Image 1 (cartoon, rainbow, N blue to C red):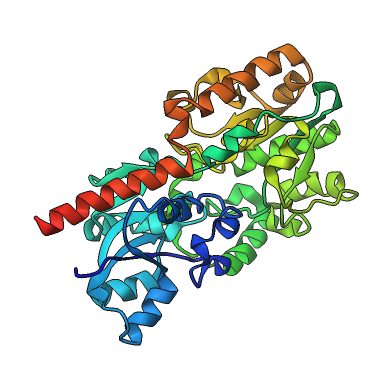
Image 2: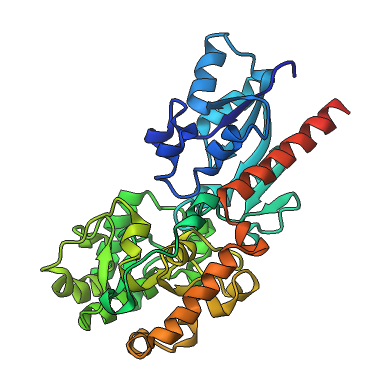
Length: 381
């Protein structure tokens, strides 16, 4: 390898054409900004290209594929093409859940066999020997300088939830589900292309999906008029199972639910942020709980069953302690300002701790830089 070029997957249109390396652009996409940190801090002396640019240059014979080190995210046909041309697959990473990226998790043994390292969440690695535990890169160190500025407690609204309506089928219909559900399932399967059977990862993790819990907490808190809901797709309730659609339709009929431009700014206006993951798998912890901490909102968390091994339990309200969403909603109405401030302060301390800083973009960039150096030393050796 005479010249080091690192190619990164860019499966989002806005990040292609090397826009991934612009921090003003990448910050808008959860988990993406660490790449610009890697480049900005010159942790690795290399030319950085998004895979669409790298592939175009290989095809134009202006770049030798053998000079390229590939960082691949998800299943990526362009990265596969660069690798087939002679590039080295250094790292395959995945920060999404099997509900939304079943193709990757279905093929994770293949990713493990062809890549030097795989980086994904411990509970989803399925025994991959070369797995690097993923700590979802959720904030920059500079974010910690201003994350304790917010209105007074009495001026805050009660609770908010930021989640898109992109319900995924996780089980085939049964006779007990009824005809209406069966017809909905068939139509949704056609739209999503999920005729995969029980082998698909989106089905394999059906028992720990939290989509339905999200809908339950939304329903309960909207009934109480104690929740502001944000996110895309809530004008398309046909995406939801019939029973959930019928419950939520009247509650959402007079509400404008839309995406937000600045999530943390929005969260800072609320006492509580309902931050449920879409999956309850060990170690699967995304940016949601950290966004709440950074906004000084009390995180109400449901997700990784071993969350306490990663984030101290004093930093959030654990929704799994409650037998139903009605009890959780009722409890939130009893939390005092003093109790909330204790949780918020604990979260602030955690973010600045060694364990908390693992979830920063800078930490992720440093870990990858170390692995690149190790890879190159092994190649030279």
